[in-house]
Amino acid sequence: MWPRIGDLRTLALGTPGPMRSNLNSLVLAGVKTATTGLLSEYATEGEELEYVGERLALVDDHDALVGVVEVTAVDVVRFADVTWDFARSEGEGHRDLDEWRAGHLRFWAGEGSTVTDDTPVVCVRLRLVSAGAGGVATGDLGT
Image (cartoon, rainbow, N blue to C red; front, top):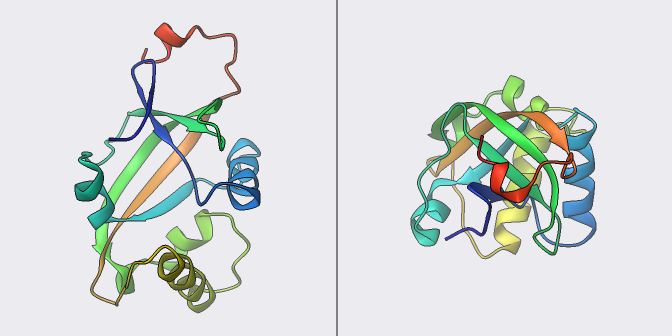
């Protein structure tokens, strides 16, 4: 299971270190409004898919809260069917869909996952609700 902060599941983007710091910065700046994961990771972790309206605790390398995001859409599609509109909303500076796909294939290969055109991926759109703890007590995060 993914760690929890209060009633919220955590969202740990990328890998710890510079990648996670960069991705978190993009979310906090409102540039990154989407993320993609492998459907198989949910089964491995014993987690359900995110759902529209769910709030997630965006965390750093130490599972400390850096912000709260709200899920605005969730779609499961084949890797080959991810659209440029979605890929661009990840906000990572890819110039086109081919570059986005190549980057994601490299990332997942580095994590030990083989991804093909038919691999199901989870496309999550999100919006920033608050940056940092925002003065919200941990027990109140789920509201």
